[in-house]
Every structure is written in structure tokens, then in C-alpha cells.
Image (tube, rainbow, N blue to C red; front, side, top):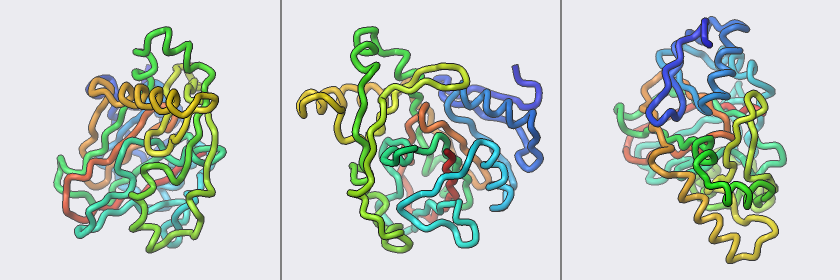
Length: 270
């Protein structure tokens, strides 16, 4: 299936490690990365050497780059959002299960994260939960129940508190309460038609057309299912690694278990 890259599936079949030199990508390599991404939901690359220009050039192979509405981007490269935890900070940007920017009308389809500075290996891992496997393991009754349901996603959801440190430094001034959107909670991948659950615990605040109690109970049941251990893989970061994931196909959750300086460069893609 892959003749230009080497693809090694991870534990629980959640994501895959790809052996490829991203500085020297071509159309054949990009197409095979897209196939692997559609199959596994998230792919990882180690030992890369990407400056900001090359990183942006690679990202553009997957679609138009998206703006992050809450923070100003990297100076000189506004497409890149700096995801940082300083040694004296207790809260880490984005900690908690979520998928990116679901409160926008057209959420980014993909996210890339490139590691600049990381704590010791084994600390500050990012957990990924496969929403392909999450959906596939629902019983037929639940699949039928949720097939046409939509949810309200808000930038003022539970995860909003984790961005406060960065907003105070370089926020855009947008009120998170002003950003909300409604999306279907079941997605189908356009490349292979695999279905996934699309319900971001950090942003989803209500399931439409259900009363408050029914919405709360269903969301609790689905979120507990989405984040079962058998759907999760934890990626161990070191400098110069890149993760690329489909926001439709996985949830992610950075683990806040360190007191060190961590700097990651994020790009989101429509």
C-alpha cells in the first residue's frame, strides 16, 4: 500500500509512526501520508529538521491554513501558534480531552504540532483517542440514536481556562463567549468513508433537540466511551518531532506532569 514511506501502526492501532524525510517531500510522499492519516487518524514523524518556512510549506500540502482566533501567531509567521508552558506555570495550554476549534463555523480539519523544546522523554506526552474505534465499538442502538444529532460547541467551554496565561500575553481580544457553533456529532472521512465520533469534551456544552438532563446524560455516556483506555495511545515527545492529526478522527490531551519549559509550534489546516 505504501511504496514511498514506511508506516508502523501504534499500540491499539491508534495512529502510526511514519518514516519519511519531510524536508524533501514530493507529491507521492504527500499522497501516501494522506492515505495513512485517513486510515489511522493521527501520524507521527521523528527526527525532522524543519524551520518555520519549511514547516508552513509542508502544512500547505494538506489544505489552506487556518487562523487561531484567540491568540496572535509567531512573529513573522502568523500561521504558527506557539503552544508553551513555562516552568513556573501550573496549567498547561489545551490540557484536557478536546479537538481543536470546534466552536468555529468551519473547524480546522487537521492540526500539526512540531516540538521545539520538550521536557525529559516520557513527560509531557500527548494522548490521542481514536474516534474511529470509539464509533465502531458503539452498539447499533446507540449508532442509530446519534446518527443525526448535533451539538453546540463553545470557546467558553471547560477547556477555556487553560488558555488564560497565553491570552494575557498575546490574546486577540475576542470574547470566547462570542464564539460558538453547531456541528453533527458523527463524521465520515471523505477519503475512505470511515465514521467517527465528533464530540469535543473541552468545548461541547449541549446536544441539540434534547432536554438538559437527557443532553447531559448522553454527553457523559459518550465522553466516557470516547476516552476508554483501549482507544488511547500516548506519544512521547522529544525535540524535532511532528504530529499530524485529523480533528474529525481523534481527540487529544496533553499530559501536564512536568515543571519544565515546553515549546511547541502548532498549525491548523482547513
